[in-house]
Amino acid sequence: MNNNPIGVYDSGFGGLSVWRELHRALPRESLIYLGDGKNCPYGTKSEEQIRELAEKAVGDLVERGCKMVVVACNTATAAAIEYLRERFSHIPIVGLEPAVKPACAMTRSKVVGVMATERSLAGRKFLSTLERYGQGVEVLKVVGEGFVEAVEADAEQEPRTEELVRRAVEPMIERGADVIVLGCTHYPFLGDVIRRVVGDREVAVIDSGEAVEKRVESLLDKFDLRCAEDNSPKLEFLSYADEEYRSRLERKALR
Image 1 (tube, rainbow, N blue to C red):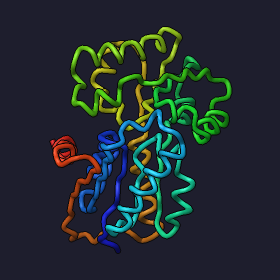
Image 2: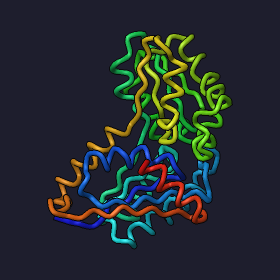
Image 3: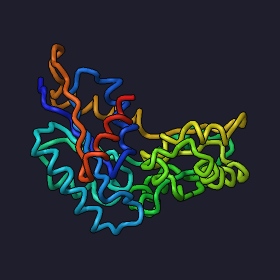
């Protein structure tokens, strides 16, 4: 038993999509969410820059007593997860990657679309997963231009955001994609918009949130880290940006 919190880290708001999965499935666990905010977006930064930012964030969560850290950012995972696991080897570090494996297994048309940041799509982990599981499948790689910025600005439902989504999604469907992978934790916040664009066409939209939650549970059991059944959970929200940004994080998570 361990009542210390689980840390969840992202460049900004995006990782809240993973935070929600964890809070839903593990309501007694305390959670500390760190949304950088100050340096968001990460998608066009160099690998070295992202690694430095991720090391600081995970280090701060470890100093606050986190028993496990979820790097709820596909871009930070792609650039830094191996380094973070070496640097903080005394605790489990969970990373993310686009759900290419299940997408390639479920496609009927043999065409899959993957939307992610530029850095994630160029990452070694993504490319190795694609090589391993994408045999015989055409994988269309699309950068979600402006997606992160729209979520950070709480502009998910604005017409200009729907136009951005339409420009990214329509060409994939026209080329035969029947599964679209949301390869950035910001993108599930655009789920309603994406579903409107897809309409009644038979296209599945998937992300990594549920798989990450299951991985966290397996590690809690493996290392005997689950909290006590009578634990009174604490939910804390942190940011390197200003207090207004931190408050927005909290409101977006809890509403």
